Structure formats: structure tokens, C-alpha cells
Length: 116
Image 1 (cartoon, rainbow, N blue to C red):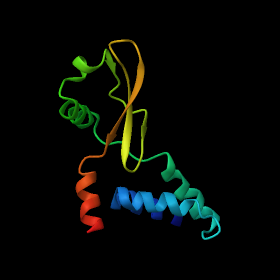
Image 2: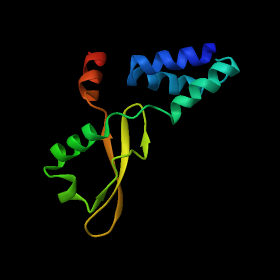
Image 3: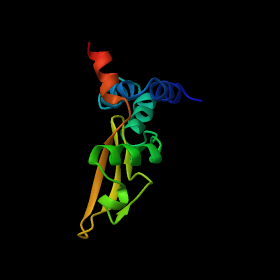
């Protein structure tokens, strides 16, 4: 395992705030060796998704209805996953294709703890 991989994996293990730090750092190629910058750049678009069933439950609680009531189609597999949220595609009952962005579980609590 390369040093860049070790750093990226450590940031992923530490959680969303550290992933965001790694993403930001990856844009400063003037500060990093190339191999580390390349590895941290992977944090831009390859964050692990959180559980889709949990995401579905969060949407249902937030919007006061089941995904079946809210959408004619809802994809459990996320379209994308990032450090703060993930995105699922859906189709409204009117036929409009939409994306539904779900903030990671406990993100507000985590940010509150870190910022205070």
C-alpha cells in the first residue's frame, strides 16, 4: 500500500470532516507530492455511500411519507456519494426526473460538536 493510499484511507476512516479536508488539500498540488495529491483527488468522487435503507428512511421521515407515496420511482442505489451527503435519483408522480440529496446521518450533530 502506498503512502498516498494510507493517508486517503485514514481520512476516510476518520469521517466526513477529514474527507472534506483531504478533498480541499488535493486541490493544492503546489503543497503535495504528486502521488499523494493523486490519491487524495480520489476523495472528490469516490466516498463510500451510507446505507440506502437508512437513506430511504431519512427521506420518508423528512418528507412525511413513504418513497412510494412521494415518487413513482426511487433508486435505492445512490447516483453519487460525497463527504457530506449522497444523491439518489427518483421520478415524481408527474413524470419529472429528480435527484434527492440526503445529508449523511448525524452530520449536523458532528458539525456542531466540531465547531463548538
